[in-house]
Length: 548
Image (cartoon, rainbow, N blue to C red; front, side):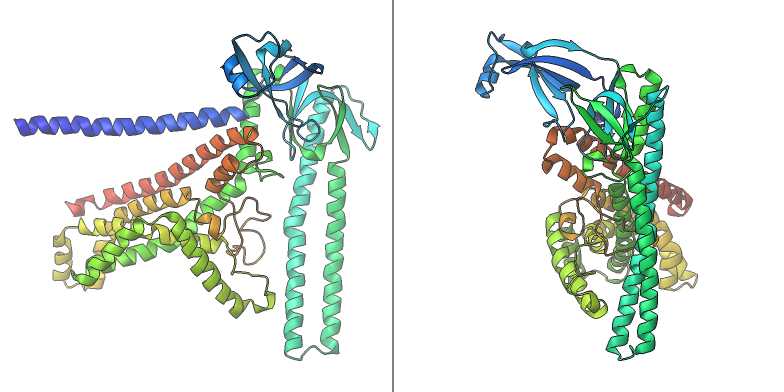
C-alpha cells in the first residue's frame, strides 16, 4: 500500500517537472517571438514637437519604448532637466532613423518636454541597404535629373522599386556567376603557365596560346564589367526625394531602398502583407552593409551546412567507437580508461575545443595541406586558415562523446538472446552485428544525433576561432567547381546573435534582431530535432516486436 502511494507521488512529481519544463520552453518562445517579431510589424510614425534649450524642434519617428522615471533618477544621471519638472515623468525612446544625415537615430524625450504630438498620415518609411530606416514625407521622383510626373506617384514608386531590385539581382548574378567563372579560368590559366615554365615547356607556341586565351578571357571580363556598371547606373538612376522633419530634402537612389511603406495609412490587410514580406526578407536575403540592414540567409545556410557536415563526420566515428567498446573490447583496464576519457571529454569547455581546432586542424593539418597541394598560392593560405571544414571537424570532436554514450546505451539495451539466436543459426559475429544489432540500435544512434545537433547548432565560442565570421562575400556553395568550398569562412546564427548583442555600435537598433535571430535559431534546432525524432520513432516501431 505504501509502495503504491509512493509510486503515485513520484508520478505526480515527474509529471509536474515535465509540465514546468514545457511551460518554461513555451515562455521562452513567447518572449523571443514577442520581442523579435514585432520588429517586422509596421509601427505608427508620430511627429513630436519638443522644447529644447535652443527652441522648439520637431522629431519624426516610432516610439521604441517608454518608462516611468522619477525626477531623482534623472538628476542622478546628470541629464539636463527642464524647469518645473514633475516628480514623475514618462521617458520616451524615439526611433528617428535617418542615421546617415541626421544622426543619432534614437532620441530620448521626456513627456514634460513634448509640446505637441500628432500622427501625420502621408509619412513614408524607407528600409535601406545601409544607414537604417529613413523617415519623412515623399516629395517625388527624379530620373536623370528630371522630375517624374505620374497620376499615382506611390504606385510609380513601387514599380520603380521592383525594377531596381531586378537590376540589382541581375548584377549580383553577373558578379557571382559569370565574372567569378572568368576569374577562375584566368587563375587556372596562370597556374598552367607557371607549371609550363617550371617544366621548361613554355616555348613560343605555348606563349602564343597563353596570350590568346588570356586576351579572350579579359575581353569577356571587360564585357561583364561594363554590363555590371550599366546595371548599377540603371538601379540608381531614379532618385526619391524625401523631406525630413527639419524640412531638408534628401535624395535617396532607389537602388539603396529595399522597401517603402506608409504605416499611418495602411489597412490591417496591408499591415499583415507587409509583415509577411519583411519576415521573408529577413530569412531569405543576404546582409547589407550592416547585419541589421539585410537578411540572415547566409547565417541560416552556414548553420545548417555546418551541422550536416558535422553529422556526416561524427556519426560514423561515434558509432564505430561505441561498437568497439561494447561488442569487441571486453571489460578490462583499457576499456575503463577509454570510457573515463569519453566522459571527461563531454565535460571539457567548448572554447578548449576551439583552441585545439585552431592549433591542430587549422595550423597543423591545414598548413601541411597547403605546403603539399597548394604551394603555388603561398604565402596566401588555402586550407591553413579557419574555414567550414575545420569548424565542422572541431564540432564533430566536441559532440563525439555524446554520440558514443548514446549509441553504447542503445547497444546495451538489446536483449542478449537476439545475438545468441543469430549466432546459433550460423551467422558470424560481423553478420549478427550488421543485420541484427545495428538496426536495433539505430533509434539510440539518432538520439545521439539529436543531442549532437542541438549542442553543435548552438555553439559559438569554438566557431569564433575556427571559421565563423561576421560577413562573408560568398556562400560555401556556388556554381563553380568543386561547388562545395570547404576552405571558405561562413556565417552562423549563434555568432550573429553574439555580434548583434555585444559588438554592435547601435545596440538600440539591433536589439529586436537579437530576439528575432535567437527565435530563428531555436526553431531551426527544433526543426532538425523533430526530423530526427520522427525518423527515430518510425525505426523504433519497426523493430519493437524484436525487442520484446
